[in-house]
Image (cartoon, rainbow, N blue to C red):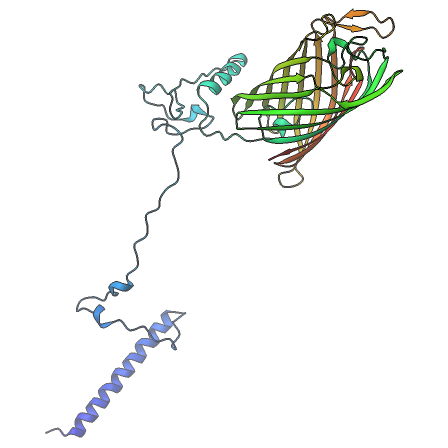
Length: 408
């Protein structure tokens, strides 16, 4: 018969054996796990409600929440049959034969893209696709290299302000077609001049939307002529509009319409004495990486001017722009090579020696010169350029232009 002492000894021995076995198991686990949990942090006991006969689970209040469904903000930019968008339709999968998409779908319309491999054919297809099948992935924005010219107006409408200073030297025949002056001896100055120098400061303001804008320009002129002295004052007010006709990654084409309103005194040599209109087209086209071409062609049409002297003329200009350096963030130095010309279609001018009226029709002025544009940021740039007359007759023989533009 076992006594209570035997039970105590048996219980004591059993507990010692169990403790020794637990120590051996813990040592083996520590040898396998190089980073055991700190012994000072006791394991968190599971609540009694979470223990079952077969498995252990966390209480319902501590169960991890199900992940919220991710809501995608990506919106398909083309119709479902295209399978893609972009500028290279030849890499798109062929669309179903009955959708009329031609490999480049546009939301809300169907189109058949024009493709050709000849020089003229590619040019035609570019403009056709720009009108009929615009790229749904294209994001319009202002580019410094595409609008860097100083003598070609920017094709892209923008909310902007421009301060410009022109310095013209040795201007001859100032009343030709009444483009710069009113007729000498008529509404203009009463004395003939052999040549004159002038300075003209203008403030230009433009406001509008992505594809349309309206602008106004107010110049102030100071001039000195040989031999009659000089004059100064605000010249005729200019107002106008821009309408962007084509807007693609490779080119922009804009219709511009200017109106010159007679607000200055023509007798002082600071106005023409009549209203004139000037419709035209502006082009910006990407030639190569960091190289753009800008072009402009305008028809200047005088209204209610001198019946004999005033006459229409064609004004055209072109510029080749190339980014030569990017020294800072969003900053560019752009070199330009520019030309502009005037083709006189009718009208006359006053001969500075005899005072007789000489016909202007068939005459041409041509200018050529370099320039540069420093794009300080996407909202501000500074430019300087010079034009030299390459024809015997001209307006100013040398024209310097400096301007600061701010976009907002």
